[in-house]
Image (cartoon, rainbow, N blue to C red; front, side, top):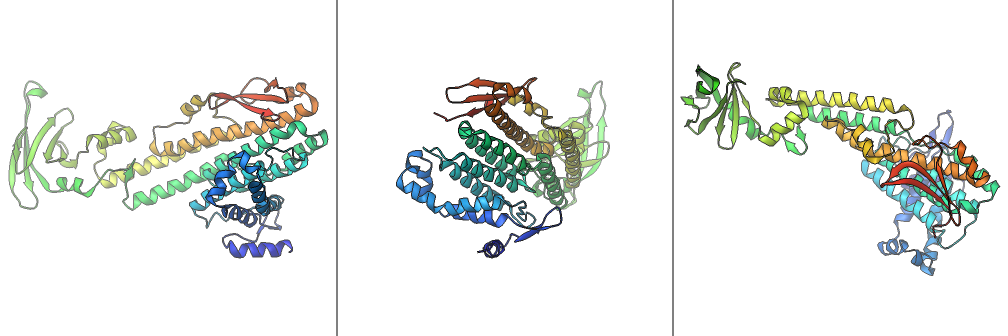
Length: 465
């Protein structure tokens, strides 16, 4: 079956993918995406019981395991075939978020199965190189034009490939090592994490604007302006406000005249008095405000401007002050003003995150060797900025760890070819000198100063036992 015919057959079952796409150079190239998707679908056909015993190395080496590996051979063949193609278009414009997650799970399953085939064996070095280069190609094809979820999946796939290569690097002769280095340089570059996160935040900002403009206002799962809360302020009309001054503000007195809009009934309240279910609860002459309460609801009377506005429950009031500061929060007394304030906050968040993205042009600008320090650099009191920065903190750091792992692999190939002295040409981006070297019984370990789970990132060359 020729390639283009096979692509047509695959595309018939995976209608969201294009059979061929136009590459950057203007040439029409076959699309790798349908091949990858078919490989994921074949892997998904295994049952839960088989998934469980596949996690057990001893079970995998048994007859049933080997028989299953033969069955999934078509998936691995599709992986190799797709990895040879320069273009992969997942048609993200029409895809849904659930597709990203399913695609990521399929890619991780397939990459692990490729590595499981080595259990208890000494595979041909060239086979290991071919397999793991195919995983790296899948990884970088997967994240191209994708989102943060795809980037994290790419990082996980890169880690799996580097781990599997490092286990067998000590058995590779010089010609295979040189071939591996050359082929690693031809692997498509990983998607820039800044491009992914910038696009994702821009789409989030568009969604926020649409929600706010439609009157949908939820912050941290709290509805700030429920209908019942604003009705009390609308029920009253202010009459006369009489303020009797004393020697100090503590000795001043206040009388407020009120009229019920619905009934036309008028009455006067002093501090502590309650009439027609409404109490003049307190007065603050420094702020020129008084508080009226009816049951669980309360409103503020602004004495100078003669306005009646909602007063928020303490948790809402504290949240508004945290979001906007005390001065701005006091002015937010309507749905419209809150929408305007949140839009302004979202706009400023975009500028803040954009500044961080712009500062990320160099390789590791915002990542420190210590894990905790990264969080202090990438943080904000702006709730919308913090939403994206929480993703940035994790994704930037994981990306830095993955990039450092690739640098460690390149250094390990050089050390395997030329000895420990070759490390002088391989600087640790998180230290003033090269990676550190430790000799082991069957290989060696290279380490970087960047921390991963509280320990320095390390790449072990040689078997695990």
